Image (cartoon, rainbow, N blue to C red; front, side, top):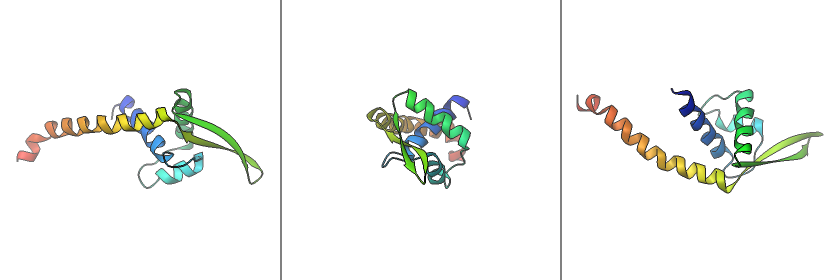
Length: 105
């Protein structure tokens, strides 16, 4: 898979993981695990990129005597998910075109 496309898909997956409630790194990985494997280093790179893009905000709170970073989706992050859902319709259409010969057999 094209690296840029995969990066965009992973960004949307992380946004979707925190869409309904604030979350933190370990929980995001755990929530995504049934669907895809994501290393901590990859996740934190994505979270930083999304924060810099204004798609999520970060707050720290104490948990078990340690500070934990919680991530919250912003309106820009919600808009990116909606944009992805529209883009996906086009991707499915392209996929159907590419595989049409196989389907006709």
